[in-house]
Structure formats: structure tokens, C-alpha cells
Length: 205
Length: 290
Image 1 (cartoon, chains in turn cyan, red):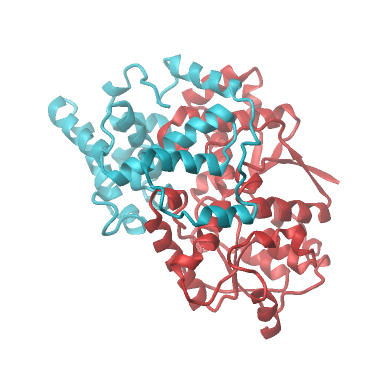
Image 2 (cartoon, rainbow over the protein chains, first blue to last red):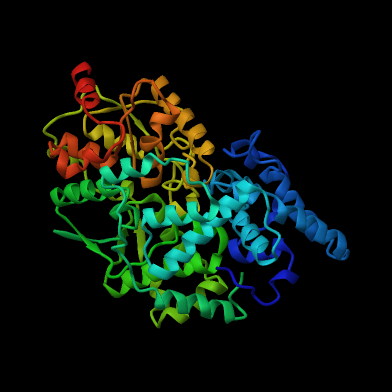
């Protein structure tokens, strides 16, 4: 789980994204190519396109001497469901003529939204967020993911018992699910590295 | 025997068992020994990098470190997601970001060597075999078989990570399929996202994307689809009865399974039993038509 890191909330999101991806959202000139190729930028899915999210991040940076307004732009980007609806398909990052790692920026927005307790509250964003959190927690605890316990835990917490109820048995018959956890790996080394990275002043974001 | 590092990833011992089975069968005939990275840890998949940059990097760096300690410089990661995570970590190490420096330090003294471990995907591994090697095992040429080669996202994107040269109109898988005697169709959805891990959290996305991909493959006259990603397979095979209910079934095979069929390997060796859309009788019927 993400734990708060010192001072990250004080930096503009554009700066945190630059640290994480090595690219700058300030280079975006709003051509819309990311939005055009995004499989989720359509009615019923994203309300704020990736292009508009880039603009919000630019505006936060532009109003550096007016913290109240800067904050408002940052908040709109962080509270948007858009980062949660992003599939991580990397089409935007691949096609951006300015070399902005837009999908990487979405990663930073999700992480910051969680740390600042601003993550989108709608049901769908919540489902996606819970799944990511449970998946990561399990990977770090057991070192391996097995589908069935992961699926059951997700359904237990989010209450989606009826969805795909018939698929479980069908997958079991095909040997695609196992009833018992049989795999694990030693995660102590990883956990120590993550812990060190959080405590190090250089280890951001 | 050539030795090659092997990072199977979680899916290949679960829902994508048949990918592991068929890959091992194909590797054995190509005289490649797959050496599994000792005690490998999950790459974190989409979820780790989605919410925790440091954790995602550390998980992948751990795999690179274990490969390095086992003397494995090149690691085959057949799952597109695992490949992407390992290759992204290598990029971050080479970029020498502050996080990479710090984590490499905390993982052990071999830090600079971590970036030398190279993750490769299935296509890169297969295209490395010179002309004649894949061909000589063919006992059942796939002449007349029309195949839609589906790449999805992470085998290709972003090219900075994958090293792919042709990103929008790739031909690598088509070239391999042609070496088996089959005919790759030209179609429009080869690099569109399948909806990925949203299968559980927002199924409507997976059904919408699956429908579009299935429709395009059918319109191009494909008899079947091949791919090299467990997530894509699950979405396009398992969910096909939902997004294409009552329509003609389109078998979805791992590339290693199609190779195995051309080489005359058994259904058991290739794990064909694990499919939701049956491979037979479609496959034999299509060959007969061709």
C-alpha cells in the first residue's frame, strides 16, 4: 500500500510526474492525439479526456504563485475517474508527438489521489481501486498471485457475487483455477527495498 | 542445448497453463533449456504500477536481481505484462533515476549489473531462430489457414520499453505464422487493447473491446486468432460466448500452440483442452477448406 512520503504533496504534480517518468507534461500542446486513440475516451467511460487532464496539470504548474487556484486544478485532476478508467494500454504514451508519458502520468495521479485521500468516489472507480490494492497487497505478501483467492476476496469486499458466477466452475473444469494456494515466493528482499525507498529522501515518488 | 532464463509469471501456472505447456513443448524441440529464475516474485502486473511506483519498480528489480545472481543475462517472459514490467525496470535502471539508484543499492552490491539483464518476449525469442529452424519441424503445413495475429498492447508499447520498430503495423507475428505455411490476414485491430484486467472490475469494457476485435478478425476472413498474452487470451477466449453469442466461434490460440499444431504435437502437450472456444473441429475444418 502506498504510504505517505515526506513533502510529495508540496510539489506540483507535473514535477512528481517528471521524477517518475523522465518526461514533462508541460510539453503537451493539446493536439488531442492521446484522446483520439484512447479506448476509454468515449461516452459512458471517461468524462475528462487524457488531453484535458494534461491541461489541468499544466494549469496547476502555471499558477505556482497562486496556491489556491493551483490547488483547484490539481484537485480536479486527482478527483477525476479518468486515471482509474485508464487501461494502461500505452497508446497515448506511444503516440504523443511531444514524448509525454501520459500513461505514466496516470500512474502518478492514482498514487497521489490515494495519498491525499482525493480518489474518485464513484462505484466504478472504487471497484477498480480496490482490485489494484488487493492485487498489490497479495503480490507483496505471498510473492505470487493465484486467481481464485484474489477473485473471491474482491467479490467479498465489493459485493459482486452474482457477476460471472458460472465462470468459476467452468474455469475449474479446465484447470484454470486452483482451489488451494500452492505457490508462494520470498518477498522479504522486495519489502525491504520498498521500505528503504520510502525512507530515502531521494526515493520519490 | 541453449540455456535461456525463464520468468513464467503467475498466470502461466494458473489460468494460462496451456501457454506454459505449449511453450515448454516448443522450446524442447528448439533445443532451448528454459531455466526458471529461482524463487521469482510476481511482477506486480498492472496493479502495482497503477498505484505504487516504488513497489512496482522493486518487484521487477527483484526478478532482475535473481536472474543476475543465477547467471541469466537473458530472460524470456512469455506473458506480455511480465515482459513489460521487467523491461520497464531495466529502462528505469538505465535512465538511472534516483529511485533506481537507491533501490539497486538496497537490493545488493550488484546494482549496475541489474540493468544488463535483458527481458525478451516470445516474438523476440522466436524471430531469433534463423530461417529453416522453425520450418524444419513442420509436419502439418498450415497452408490455406487464415490467421489474425493479435498483439494487444504491451508486446509493442511503448516502443521506448519494448524496442519495437513497427508499432502501429507490426509484422513480427505474421512472419512467424508464414514460416508455418499459414496466411496472416490484414486487419485493423491487431494493436487495440482487449480491456486487460478490467475483466473483473468493469466487464463492459472487456465485452466492448472483445466485440470490436472479434468483429474485425471475422471481417478480415480469419479462421482463428493467435496471440502471446494470458490476459488477452482470457478476454478473447473465455468471454467470447458473451460478446459473440450465437455467432461463429473464432478459436483463440497462443502462438506456441499454433506452432505446436504445425509441428504435429499432441493436444495434451499443447493444453488445447483448456480453451473455452474449442480449437477443434474449427482448426481441421479450416485446414481442409484451405
